[in-house]
Length: 532
Image (tube, rainbow, N blue to C red; front, side, top):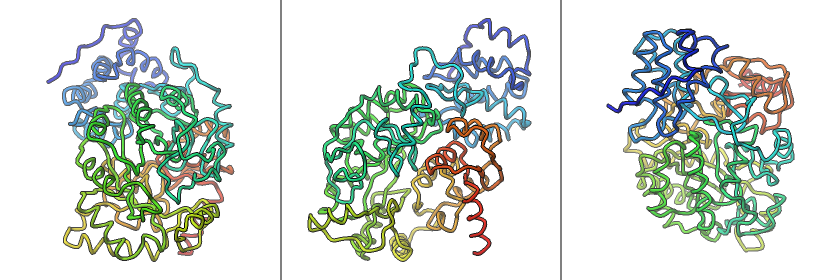
């Protein structure tokens, strides 16, 4: 058993000890308690904080905290830190049952465990993890005010890409970008030729670099970024994080996020490959909750040039890691191009042979600029009617995909087959073990979003998503300059009586882990269910 020495008693801690056990239950005292407990915080060893908190507890809560230390309940068996968002299911719930904790004791225990995490940047403290700070960390100088940063987000493109700030709220999370441009030359790329985004410069080579320090500094200064909560994507929509030219910056940023003690989900979507040495680098991360999403859909190489064989070898190798969450991205699926029966069967056989556990389907975005580009290169056009900004995957093709899935996995029991999801956020929640609901709140439309092959365990987690309290919602609304906006909180959704942009709504959902709608959307949702 590892021992963790109790840090020396500070003057602030002595005062709290004098107050007695109620100090952890009195919300008015929590800012002082958090400050005193975090004086013992070491990102590499969070247990002294717990040991210190045991001196402030009644007997039952003290025993629960003793279990946290003795059994290292803040870490997985691999040594990786359990993300803050997963503590309720993986740590709090078992301790609550074992020690028969009362609700107020559970609340105090949760507060102590939050004190074992660092909160760099302008958002979050252990007693108010979703709110803007009133006092910034020593030495931290934001590159702009929250109002200035939010103004740049308001001017972002239709998919949220904020090329003036390079940290962008998008549907999948906050994208942190070091530069713009990609040499892989996929014909369907919607950043292609510079037609869709100011600042893309029509460049196939990455340009406009930020250093890793600069990119992370901008992330920490963004009022929409919540430590340990906001999903992060590295080059989610501007380039390819594992390119040789970008890998050093990607790796430096991951190391910096890890040293800061952040347990946010961090995603890298790739059509490239990494060496075994680079995979080992990713496996060395202790705090960051990394997932790697490897794209493969049997697209013809004339349309998607990155080498298939090397990509599939990489997928097989990284799927063997017990420290990296790996998703197989079955996308883009382009009607009439990679949707023959032979294509569909080949992809499923490939994923089965590789050992894929979680697979996310996705259609193709296709606009007028792509039509001109495809025609100029002599490439076949996908079929179907495209809506600007929307991915197309018809119901008929989806049904054929799942028929092929059932055929390839016919000899595998249903509960042992890989999960097949429509949404990346669903896939990431499933791959992590179904400890939290789909963080984009898609389960408000189960017939649309949950119809493929989502595990029962994930359905159960999403079905019991907890409604947030009003104070939490108001803290978040203040961060998007919507303070005072009327809200209705129900078990199924949070209704905000304002004309939210898609990215404001995404921001709220990702922080609340709960569906969020405007009043109009909520009315349409109810009407649709009544007419179904």
